[in-house]
View 1 (cartoon, rainbow, N blue to C red):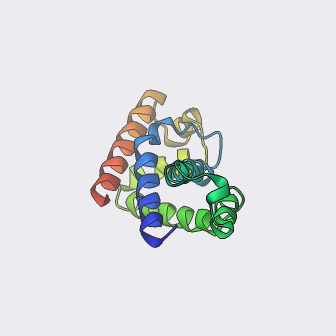
View 2: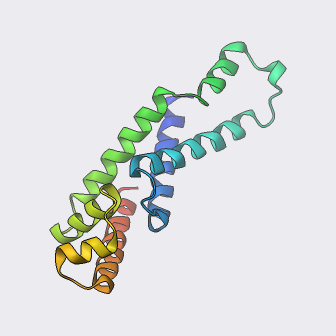
Length: 145
């Protein structure tokens, strides 16, 4: 993969993370969730590149490179950092109230009930606030794409 492919993977991973942000349920680390999306994008890219290539016709170095992508690869670290940095920069552009709820929900995995107790607001108000925060975050990230 060349630097153009890596840029495409980063942008597509970021785009899909934005599109699926509402589906993040907090059951895993946020970074792990984003990396899962990035891995899927990489696998799609590999499928496209190798679709019409027979394994026996593939040079050993290229085959080894493809196999290495299925294990821990520095590319995943780079993707994670790039996507994480873009999301953090976007979060920093949100209002303090939106930043706080995103931090509590996405990164600290605090339940809506607990956030409600902490903030002294109703759960429905917290759901609405979270929804507006995600909408604002998505808008900021889409503008960066």
